[in-house]
Amino acid sequence: MELIYLNTVWIVLASAMVLFMEGGFSLLEAGLVRTKNAVNVTMKIFVDLTIGALAFWMIGFGIMFGDDAFGFIGTSLFGSPEKIALSIELPSAAFVLFQMGFAVACISIVSGAVAERMNFKAYILIAVLICIIIYPLSGHWIWNSDGWLAKLGMKDFAGSAAIHAVGGFAAFAIAKILGARKGRFNSDGSANVFAPSNIPLASAGAFILWFGWFAFNAGSTLDASNTALASIAINTMLAGASGGTSALLITLKKFGKADPSMTINGVLSGLVAVTAGCAFVSQWSAIIIGAISGLIVIYATLFVDHLKVDDPVGAVAVHGFNGVFGTIAVGLFDTTQGLLTTGDFSLIKVQLLGAAVVVVWGLFGGAFMAKVCEKTVGLRASEREEEEGLDMSYHGIPAYNELERFTDLPTSLYNFEETTGITVAPTRGNEIRREVM
Image (cartoon, rainbow, N blue to C red):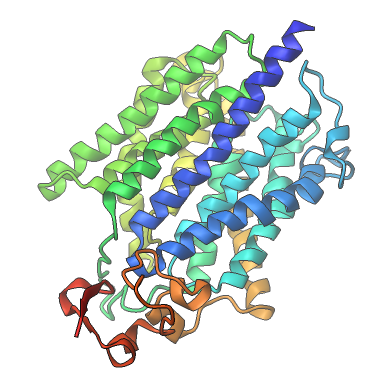
């Protein structure tokens, strides 16, 4: 009886840490986009935590963990996820809460990739669709004991495939259909860099995500008495540190400067890549996985740019490409079945199949959601809304409000001077001088 109390405390705490990662997503994205869109990315995270969480509780959980039909889809527990029968000493409510954090994280991967030009109503619709069908369906294949990939023996301990690869490639498809931000790419195919608004803010977001990742991975044991908790946690730490080190050193050599955004994404890539295998690989393997992921994120980012897919925060490279790599890495480094550790080919074949399935499903799901939005609420913000900034267009308030003296704010930053008599400083983008003429 004491174990169920201990497990309850552990999983509720882990759930809170995973849900707190949404604060990390918010700060990370707000720091990497332009100032005029910082409120909008924060509001999208609130959509994830509100509408998305409710949609998953109502429908998505049942599709993911309900009674299986043909190894493909769950068919029960709709509107009553607490009725799930668990084989572990844990209250069902704690399990549902923990899984809710995973579902919300999957939506937030898409948020960054479509930043600065998506219709806010379209994002709400996409959040609902991800939580009721896109994430739960492939999650059923991998994590429901009756799912077809689970029966084949696929290993994805905490979601490199089920969460990150699916979310990353859904984000890729949506961003491709959505189109690039105005001025992002030139006619000759070259890319223009839009400077991030606040790197320290983005860094704080990455630190929060890293903190929450210990619960993301170690919490997936669902058992506070499991001695693997420590090895899972240190593998998580080592892979994140190795990914950040790799990206930092590569950018220092390649560009002559240690790039902060790439270092941030290197850390996150290491965390993503080790998520599938954190319970199955050695500490040295975790370091190798992280180091490779730091290399992948740099060249995957360049590849995505080459395809003229505009991803303001690098979500596709971090979550999509490294989610796939992490899934395959289990088949290479697993201590009992890994190709490189034991010479066994059986697991790597299943992992390759699983990786291919989630890539195809993510691309299909992303394209499906984008087309649904196009036909209903509209996928993209108008040109005027994009130029003005989505903060003012959709939420009526800027992120950094220097107009506190005024009660009637103009609807556009482009007619401030005419409307308010405030001088706009041309060298400071959308920031406004405080001096009144």
